[in-house]
Length: 140
Image (cartoon, rainbow, N blue to C red; front, side):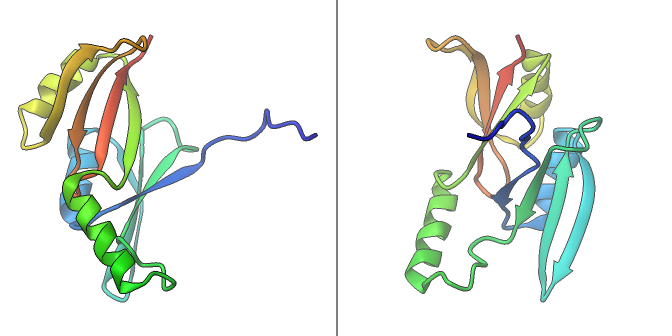
C-alpha cells in the first residue's frame, strides 16, 4: 500500500467556447490570475488559478479536441455544455455573500443564490461563459 499523503490536485480541466469571455470570467470576475495561454492551430489552452495558490490550476481547454472522439460524441458534448451539464468545478470563498453580490452585478448567469444546504454547506452557483457549472462554497 502506498502513502497518498503527498498527492495534491494540480490541475483540473474545463472546456471553453470563447477564450476571451472565459478569461474575463475567471480573471476579471473571480480574480484568478492567468498563468499560461497557449495557442495551437487556432485553439487556446488557458491556465488560470487563484492568486497565492500556484500549485492549483484550472486549464480552460477547447472542447472535444481528443482525436479519439466520434462526431456523435462531439455533438453530445456540445449539447451537454449548452445545457450546463457537462462540467462542474467547486470553489470556496471566505465571503460567499460578498462574492455572490459582486458576480450577480455582472452578466454572470446565476444558477442558485446563496443558501444553506441540508448536507451542511452554504453555497451558490453560476455558469461560466461555456456553460460550466461553477459552485462556490462558504469557507468554514
